[in-house]
Image (tube, rainbow, N blue to C red; front, side):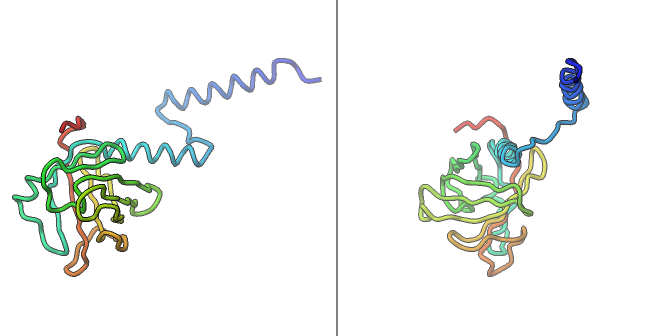
Length: 171
């Protein structure tokens, strides 16, 4: 006959191991892959949220002029984006986007809600370089997804580098 305390002891030891991982800064991955994916998506959306300044870009292999870079600000709020001023390097002035952080490179699909590309899906890739810098490369609306961060002449691709201005979204 098993002793009454053995289940309690196993539960207590499991709790100690779990807490030890949290105290040491190591967290156990969720057992459910769907939960892990949801956490990864949330983490990337959180990292992408903010006011971003365009710092470098190429459209169809040509560098975007400095004057356009300085005047191009992007505001992203999780899965929503908008350009508060006229931007010559976006596919739409506002819209929604979905991400897939499990691919290499990570994938993003953007759907414009206004402008000439309203309703069209623009496929791209993205990279969160660090907390203050990200990059993206986009194909043409309703066209194929880029596979790398290059914009050769004739490719129709738009590649962008962004620097975080603020996590506060503002206007």
